[in-house]
Length: 296
Image (cartoon, rainbow, N blue to C red; front, side, top):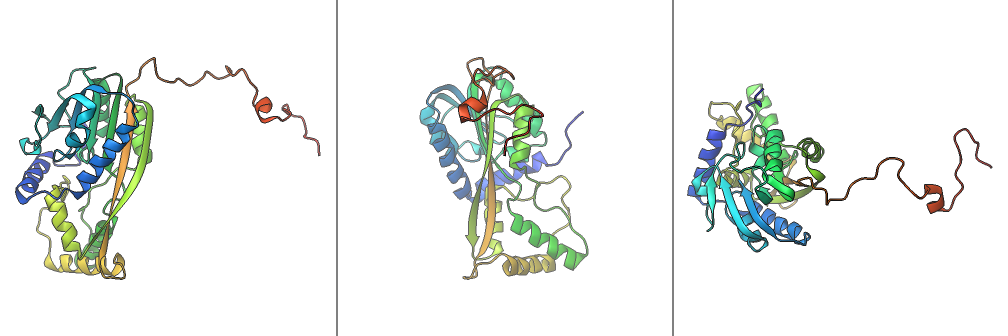
């Protein structure tokens, strides 16, 4: 059974190419790339063979270049390769790597737009050698919530209905469950919120175009956005999400995922009943058996 088609991947490639032509807005990917480097700094090992999966621009590859002997860039468009080194044009939903061929896979702000994230995670885990590491950052569930709410309210008021304009993003709990389902060991997820301020919502929309992050939903409305709807959206956005100085807020929730390909050398949970010390002894208390009433 194939995964539902949520995103128009062909349109995504077009939007990524357009962003490169416009001059990409890189503040978010630059921030995430630095954070990936910081997180990898806590891993005291070097990775012989690594891959950067779909990250826009070369920011991630530059940030972690010193951690891998070989770093392969994977992108859906050739325009994504703005850094030297080996690269391959491939879709994140169909990885070109053999099983057990990589020691590290990183990905920044790319996997939130795949149609089959569970299947992609399984492919990533299979491509890793035993004890290989996967580290990724995705846009999370409450990203662009201000824009989503403002558009929904404006469309309902002006047009009498609502169409999908901001993609559904994953939350940390769902991401952790998917890592476990894909077979990763020691899965960890967390969320970081980045708030960006703009003079008006038009500044945010311009940045989204230059990120290649505008609407690529398969069920998006095909007709042009009405001027009255856009005007009302801007008014509602300013009314509901502006600060005292008149600037408006835009939230980007970054969901972090990490997991390891299983290996016998990794810490293993103890089997039930294998403990050699009673909890009561460790706490310095008397154990009360089932049915016994505690003394008053």
